[in-house]
Image (tube, rainbow, N blue to C red; front, side):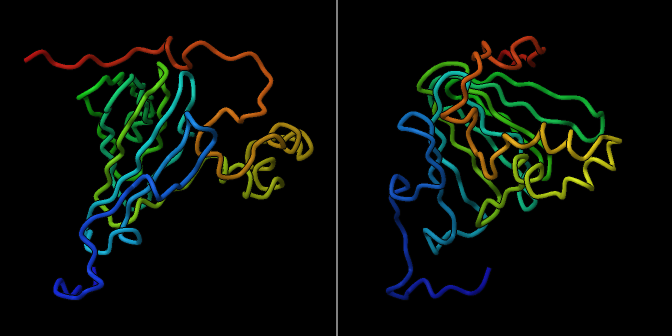
Length: 195
């Protein structure tokens, strides 16, 4: 971090995260952000304040610059991550007061299991940078993806056409397919140790 004069009148020590939206799907599913751009005295910490209703998903993504600690304030969520060493998805169900730690660079996603789920994602970087799954699918040239995965290019385009860039919270508002009941629920969740 560049030197900051803590005696400067420009040094900020408080901020209202509610005034800093990152993404809004609707009044029940949105994300607010706090990073060094919002509060210039932050050092190696930032956060996302996440609100979701049942079956909404923070889309699969990874953070190229930070690890993420997901803290459940209210509701319940499934935090799932791909362990790059075992090539297996690890699932953790968290409730208020519980956390799941996502190591730096790991592919992961969160699913709200109940309405009024409120999560705090805390990062060890001054700004949480992100690579979203929807952006990878949308912006990688179709001919490259089709060739790589031995598919017809038109087939790839047809399959990925509905994917909108920078989804953040899915499914889309205009999604008209039947809702799944708790995506990922059939997967095994790790239990928290009893103390």
